[in-house]
Length: 349
Image 1: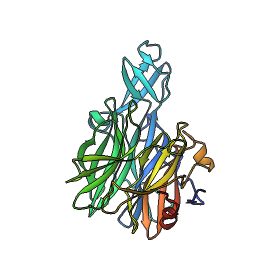
Image 2: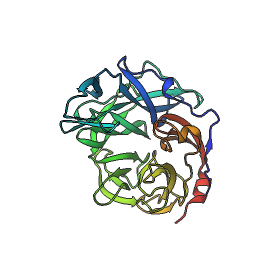
Image 3: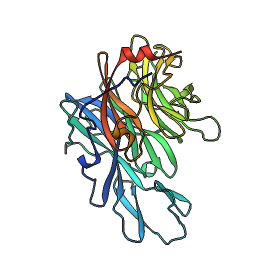
Image 4: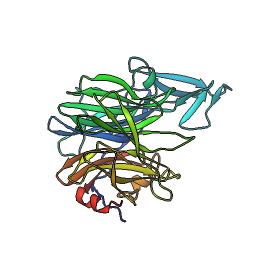
């Protein structure tokens, strides 16, 4: 099956050069995987901004967030035998892992869905406290009634878990803490209740037994989750043979809940597929992509900070059209559209 997406002619829409670093000691390395929502008549992106520190001669400097959400920089002497800097992304000092980059979230506003800009009245969303010391990543936004629910990846030396914040105005946030403990990520909450319960997709990981699969959870209040059910696993020799995870909130269609997800191979090539869930019982899988509905092919998708990657966790739905914003090559933000009917026609059983 061919790629059925329609990419925008002005892609990529955003690159690292389009934003300014959070402070003079930081450099923006890449932009990634925005959450997407509508607010105040505008299309908005909640962009993940990954930064690294300006380096000093003879030292390796890494950033962390303190309890107040401010960046602190730790300098390690390159000659210190306790330092293991063999991995460019994760270093180890005296048995403790540190990331060489750190991510925060920024709101970008647009009148037309193409040209985006920041607004000084809306704050950066940064890591706070022990469980977000290494940043926050890949936020999904679900609007339920008049409340926006932000599910995002919390990163620290303790592991990777799912955090939740809620807001109505994007200026004041209510922090709910870690709702799914490590190792877990890719959490997307359904935008309406089913049988008076909240539902969410998530992705726990087990490197020893099991794998990187999509699970379903339910909740009485949107904060406390249980009754976890595995609904989609990796498949040998397909685009999702090594790992898969949910994208944005599932889309309600007359045929079922349509979820666009990412799948990756052991070569770390990330494509998009789709899965269809029963309207009344989302633990029941009705259909699933046998081949990608979108795969890396443009130069900005194939080449970048980490090439051969298409990853989405945000979209706007207008009738039959999905206006999907995605991260490309772990560096750029781009736009593609899909027809819901066309996706549904591709799904196998």
